Image 1 (cartoon, helix red, strand yellow):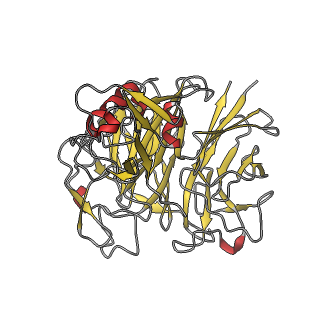
Image 2 (cartoon, helix red, strand yellow; image 1 turned 90 degrees about the horizontal axis):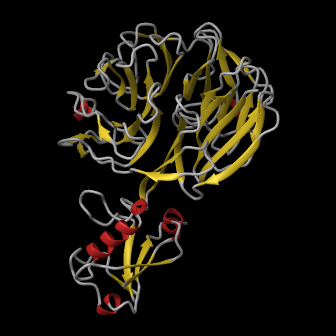
Image 3 (spheres, helix red, strand yellow; image 1 turned 90 degrees about the vertical axis):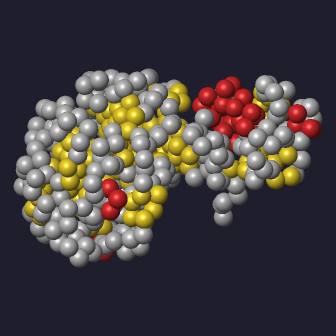
Length: 371
Length: 98
């Protein structure tokens, strides 16, 4: 009998939601780390009871936790994220030079193959790697020191590295995304990096062929097709079929091509989910209707999924790391809102129910399938 | 023996009560007291001061007997009453709420 565990990071702690295969009755534990912003929790594919958590606060800085028993108990692990070498400057919002300064860990990505290896995407943008279960962290500084690094500018949420995708067929290939620098790829395990932003168009960048400066919000990959990536950009939903060498727009009939998260169905590589948000200055769903949009054609043709979701007076947001899928035969889809709801569908998005209604604002959702 | 008062979040993190007591080798200064706290409670490293520069985090303040020592030099001697264990060295999260 399989189980599902959903790891939820919120503005005021972490929560763990578990259910059996039916995904009807849920057990909720938490808050873990009460009172703290939990940007992200993610478990190791090698041992699903190994979970890493990023806790941050303006007062007491970055704190990291690890559990080896599925979130029942936690230990504090290394929180020293020291940039490797000279930091120099990136650009501030007004184009002036601004010193590089570590602020917090946005995203944790455990290795697909090694229990003690985990990557951390941080603000100000850099990629760190630990090979000792998070006790110590070393920057892969080929990314930050890329020749374009001094031109990167922060997005509204900061200069954050928020997406890390590991190629299951090629351990040397890593994709990352940074707001508002764009997407980057390494083919040598993170030593060197190249921007992969060809085909992206951003109205706020005067140079339409700009190599960097694109506000990528999130990217997703199906493990069976690691060369195909889907991207939710500040504006536009994009797709590449050659590992980022060239992107093309697949926004199609979406009511808004702005949004934050994007996910791919566990068993259907051409089935993609987004949550359209009205615009970059509203940050709430169009027409007060919370709708997940699903494409079963790899983009361009989208259908609204509304059954069980509020269809009037709904003005929540869904943040970039707050959507995930499980791997059960009937694929489950999960997302959390800034209103504190975590919605679940056990039938690929056809029907939705709220597992919880009243959590603090949800920052991240990660679903685990346990067998 | 130096008495130190921790803010609630750091009490939770270190799994202590409000007051902890540490022994300091040599003179009691901000640096030596925090060195001793971090040695006794490694999970607090980086939460009170920067790992590398050892500077106080911007939203943390230090008080003794209602006196704000936040801007005193790291290596300045703390008041005698702290060194004698009569008054606590108080670590406070800056008021930044609403």
